[in-house]
Image (tube, rainbow, N blue to C red; front, side):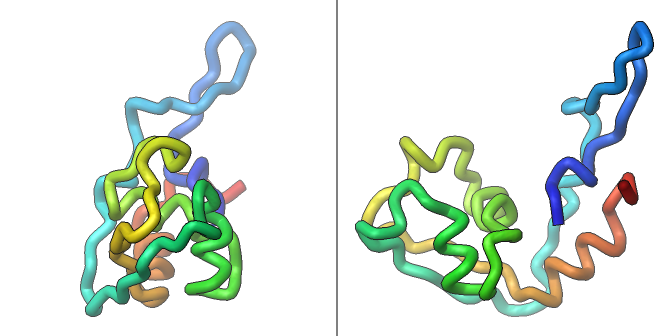
Length: 103
């Protein structure tokens, strides 16, 4: 699941662009108890690796960063940090409800 599917597209001068000001990412809610993951040295700065360890896929790295309010994993992911990990049911529910594009 790509995070760009939660951004609207618009066309300017025949160029299609993503509207970064309009997105539904802030609508993510926890309906189920989250898990937690303690960041190790081997996880820095690889949120895709953390996603793979937790979910078995690298696809959800951006959701982990989103719910933990991490803008830059190179600067903000530190060893020993405790990350909140959303339940996969919440992720699929979020996708179903708030995805704005299907491409």
